[in-house]
Amino acid sequence: MAAAFQLSLSSSFLASPLPTSTVIPTANRPLRRLLISSAIAPSSSSSSSTLNLPKKKHWKVGEYPGVSETSITQFSSNNKKRTPIKNIKKKLDKKNNAKAWANTVTEALSDAIDKKQWLRALQVFEMLKAQPFYQPKEGTYMKLLVLLGRSGQPGQACQLFDEMLEEGLEPTAELYTALVAACCRSNLIDKAFTILEQMKSLPLCQPDVYTYSILIKACVDACRFELVESLYEEMAERLIIPNTVTQNIVLSGYGKAGKYEDMEKVLSRMLESTTSKPDVWTMNTIISLFGNEGQIEMMERWYEKFRNYGIEPETRTFNILIGAYGKKRMYDKMSSVMEYMRRLSFPWTTSTYNNVIEAFSGCW
Image (cartoon, rainbow, N blue to C red; front, side, top):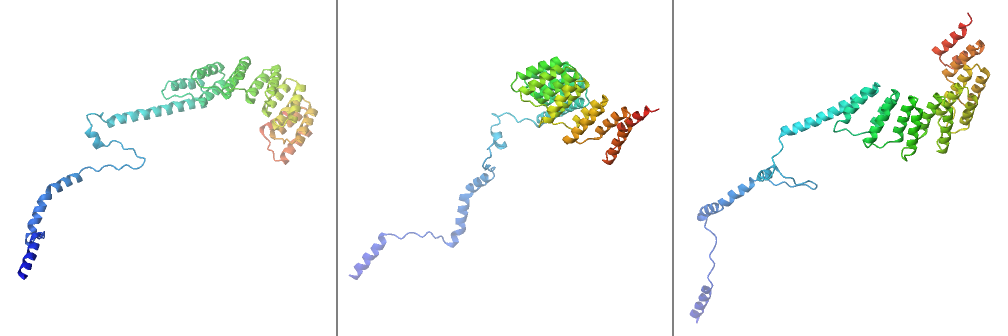
């Protein structure tokens, strides 16, 4: 029985064979290492080749993944050749030369305008317009129009203005006013009024106080006082208030023409106005007119009026009084004015001494 039990037990163990051990003896480990190294040798060479490849660019946020030089070589047959550095340098040199030429021409134009050389300025301006970088500018035309007006070239100014319109530059009230001034300086009053009518027909080029002031001065200088009154009426209709400078010009014109009633009307309006108040130039104009006419009482009366109005005299004011008193041989008043100047620390000028010399020269 015991023998049978041992047999069955041993047979049960033999039915499921034991797994062979994977442990390699120590003596066989060098052989295993050799086999493993020979087996993985190709894979290590392939990994080294992958390590030698150029690393891919990891683009940051916002950067554009452009084409690299290494990728260009792969598609060189389908892409154009890169621009040689020499050609790039030539283009940069041309661009720099163009900028230098532009600066040179612009500086030459500015120099001609500053030196009031109107013909040279127009010639340089024609050279400037022929350049590809030229762009019409309002400031350039304004300077040229003012230069031509001061140089007595109204015809050239009108021609330049027409060329400006042909170039597509929009006119402004300032440009039209400069053209009006160019005509008025050469006493082309009718032409100036024609330009004024053109301005009134353009919504964006309406005449302003400066336009009317220029026209009024031209009419006063030409003694066309009927036009002055019409301009005043037109300004009132347009709610344009004449400034103090314009009023002083009209006062001087009326005074020189002997229109004292009209002069006093203008002066009364100035005294009542809040925008065109009389100033020291107004006072000098009025007292000079009466002083030259020998109307000493009127001169003194208006002098006191202006002082009461708050206008302080200046050196020229005192010289006008000294000259008027000297012509009338009123030496006491002349001396008192000079003493008053000394007390107020007003310097005696060349005009002061000339008035004194002229006053006493008739005594011998």
